[in-house]
Length: 268
Ligand code: HPA
Image (cartoon, rainbow, N blue to C red; front, side):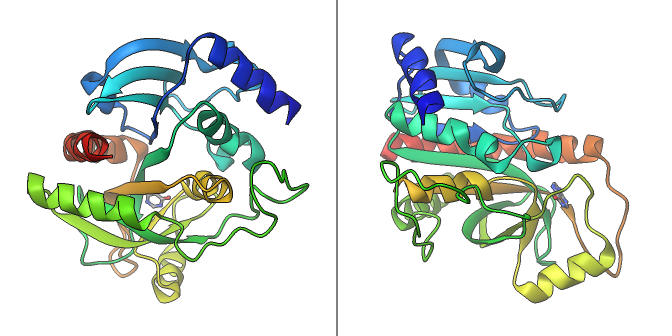
């Protein structure tokens, strides 16, 4: 909590405040091109912020205008497979909420478990399965942030999700809606794991988003998240996938995602 206050004070002094928070996933940084940037700070200059290690991530906190709102944008996020604790991964979400954000939008790259999905599809998260070996809220509860046993009956905000669906219709962007399963990574799934995930009720699988969503729910911060489907996890016809291929698909599909985020931000 003391660390949180130090970080928030540091960023407040630099006027890093905003109405909406955005966390951009792997290969999904182009939304920044639509932002009128007012300020940016690299993570290593922010006290107590983890530093992102994956090369495809930039690692900056950006303040800027998009869709008529002031946004705080994390360009580059933290993953469990990089060796961070779940508390470190979610620290920036707590910071952004204390800096004023009232809604959080998240993007990620994910593999399809639902075989009706195609590469490049967007999926709105309706629910999730936490398959990480832990939960960011384990340990002492910070009562000033939220309750000991947060409700998770609607982890992705109903109102924000409605706005996402309305915006997608208006922009003529096809939008799937499904269950996201998070696994630790860094390995992708085996055929048997894809089969199991489908049986568990997942539609897509990835390595992020759920910790941030849990911490946001703890604080009563509404969240919506979009998965960009970068590869298909068909257990009976599984092809090897590389990060390069994932990035190519993400790069193409992020144009739709960016338009969608911008439209939703304009309505909140
Ligand atoms: N699993 C499978 N495919 C993926 C993932 C994942 O975690 N992330 C992006 N594509």
